[in-house]
Image (cartoon, rainbow, N blue to C red; front, side, top):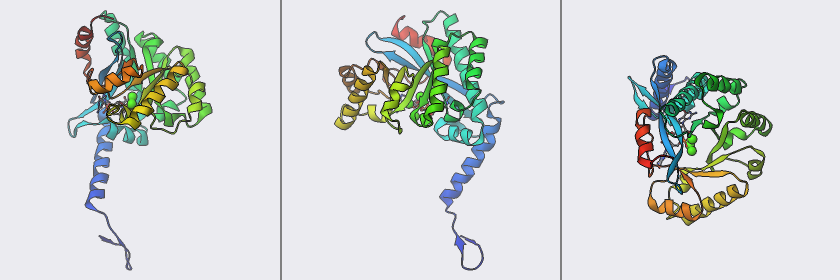
Amino acid sequence: AKELGGNQVQYFSPHIYAKIERRMTLEKHLRKALEKNEFILMYQPQVNVIENKIVGFESLIRWDSPQLGRVSPLEFIPIAEDTGLIYPIGKWVIEEACAQNKHWQRLGLPKVSMAVNLSSKQFYDRSLCEQISNILQDTGLEPQYLELEITESMTMDVQVALATLNSFKNMGLQIAMDDFGTGYSSLSYLKEFPIHHLKIDQSFVKDISVNPTHAAIVNTIITLARNLKINVIAEGVENEEDLRLLQDFHCDTVQGYLFGRPVEADQVPEIFARFGKA
Ligand code: C2E
Ligand code: CA
Ligand code: CA
Ligand code: CA
C-alpha cells in the first residue's frame, strides 16, 4: 500500500504490478523485434474434406524473443495495436505470406490461397489497398491467392468497411469473415459485404458433437451462408466426431488440429505430399 497523504491509501496488488511490468517489458522488446528478425510465420492447412485436398493455408505470426521466449500473438498483437507497431508488423506479415505462397508455386506445388489476418487498425488504414497492391506486384503473386481475414468487430463502421471491402474485391482478392459468431455483426450486413468465406469460430465448433446448442448454431450458420452463397470454413476441428457432424451439416472446408497444426514454411511440401496432389 502506498500512502497518498491524509487517509487516502492506494493499493497495488502484486498481481496488477506484475501485469504492468510484463506489459512494459513486452513493449520494450517488441519495438526492436521486427528489425531483429524475431518474427516468423507458421502455416496451417485448410482442407476440403470432400476431395481430401488442401485449398489454402492460414498464416499465423509467432514472436521468438531471445529475452522472453516464444510470445503468443494473443498477447503481443494487442500491444502492437496500442503502440502503432501493428502497421510495420502487419505489412511484414502480408509481404512474407505473399512471397512464401509465390515461392511454393515456383516449387510446383498446387496453387492455393494464403490467408492473412488483418488487425482493425490495418483495416482502417487508408494506405492498405495500395500497400497490398504493391506487395502483389513485388512478389508476383496473383490476387486470387491472397485472402484477407477480417473480424466482425472491424465492420462496425459499415460505410467505410464496405468501401474497403469493395476495393479488395475489385482488386481480385479473397475476403474471409473470421471468428464468425463471436462479434456483434448484424446478419443483414452479410449479404451487403462482398465476403467469399465465413469462418465459424472454434468456440462453437470445438464441441458440437457433445453440445446440442453449439451444433444448432453451427448448423444454422452453415445454412445461412449457403443461402448467401458464401463458403464456410469450420475452425478448430480437433476430432472425428465433430468432423462427421460438420459433414452432416454440409460443411466442406475445415481447419484444425485434426488435419494439421500450424507448421513452418519448410514443412509445407510434406503436408501437400500427405494429401496427394490437388
Ligand atoms: P485466429 O485468427 O482465430 O487463428 C486461429 C487460432 O486457432 C490460431 O492460434 C491457431 O493456431 C489455433 N488453432 C487452429 N486449429 C486449432 C484447433 O484445432 N484447436 C485449437 N485449440 N486451436 C486451433 P494462434 O496462432 O495462437 O493465433 C491466435 C490469434 O492471434 C489468431 O486467432 C489471430 O486473431 C491472432 N493472429 C495470429 N497471427 C496474426 C497476424 O499475423 N496478424 C494479426 N493481426 N493477428 C494474428
Ligand atoms: Ca484467422
Ligand atoms: Ca478465427
Ligand atoms: Ca480469434
